[in-house]
Image (cartoon, rainbow, N blue to C red; front, side):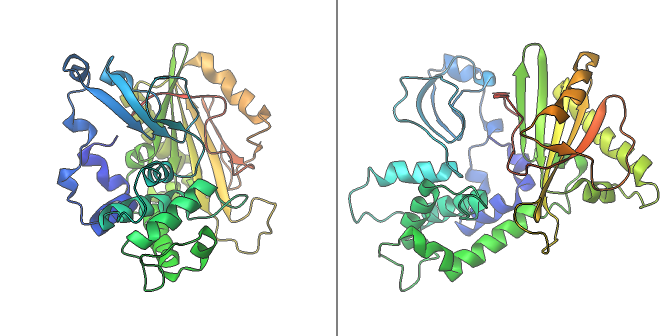
Length: 340
């Protein structure tokens, strides 16, 4: 969940909420809840986009789960308990309730718009191998489209087949708009970049975090104000200061930054790095974790190589790499144990 004060970190969500005519002040955010007191008040939870209750909520019960992450094996008696891979959790939500509604039931337009926008933000309706949309995503979008404000004379009140989606002009236009907003981090500070898409993990005594950033490290260096002549020193110093402060704020033994961005190189053939590129920057505080910096390049799934943004003299407790396998978007071998 997100705090009210952090909604601006995801402009694509702000746009989708406004388009559905939802007042942001009416949203239930994490800073509205009394956290651990909820368990003593008899509260229970239905989890969406998570399948394990965060520790801050104490021992409150979980009665339902709809999620698209790795099943962590909690709340086995939850009903429903829908945990399966999909590009967007909103697709599983839509699919679950679509199966409960009588035929011909009209879905409120605002709700349809919100769910459909979420699916578009998460997947762009691109199936594998180029994207991550699954059959559940395409089926959910096809079901929602006739109920949404994007419905046209040919789609309103009719059955839309998934193979019709790629040619729908209204969908294509909204995907482009949402994608542009999602990638616009012009006004975000270094701290904002680190926390806009952030997950925490706990393994043994160590807490560490993974920040996914829709901006290449060269772009981040440019945001610091360092020139091309001195970015190898002062630019990296400023980026590392952002990360170190974030690590102190979150009490992290290690922090990883995974960038995901468009190189703009349309001449790159499929099968190589392609237009989509990823970089990995890892910083450690605990000297016992320095070995991780040496072990990561040996992880065959990541395909880490020399950073292609220029010369950089990595410090003893941080490294930066180009990630060859752009499909890997999560920390290898870890499961989320904590929330932001």
